[in-house]
Amino acid sequence: MNAPKLSAWDEMSDLDKGAALLHVWKCSWEGVSYAGREYPARYLESPVLMALDRVAANKHARAVTGGWDAINNRIGVAEAERLYDAALEADRKRILGGAS
Image (cartoon, rainbow, N blue to C red; front, side, top):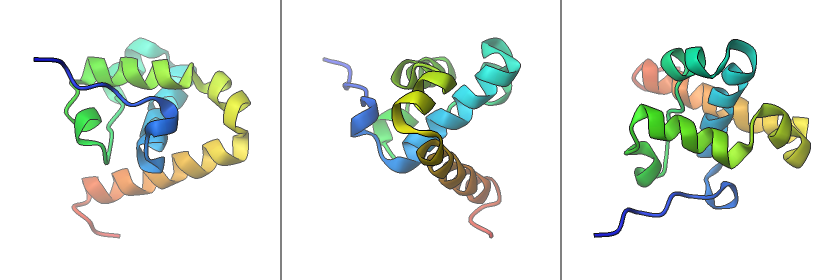
């Protein structure tokens, strides 16, 4: 049985892109080890990405973005902030059980 193909950046939903950005932002500020433990990539929409364990999700987030600076150079700061903010809000709702 073949493992499912993991999404490339251009194949990901906006919320999953934002989830990757949440993780790589913390990596850039706190380091990969700390971010991996305390701020893992928590994908929000793709069943395949959501099924990844913490280590695999974190590696995927770093791989598809190339890191915070690289993705900002590629998509622009405004787009990175839009995606980040959308995922942050969705993650907060998930944590609070859908409450605003």
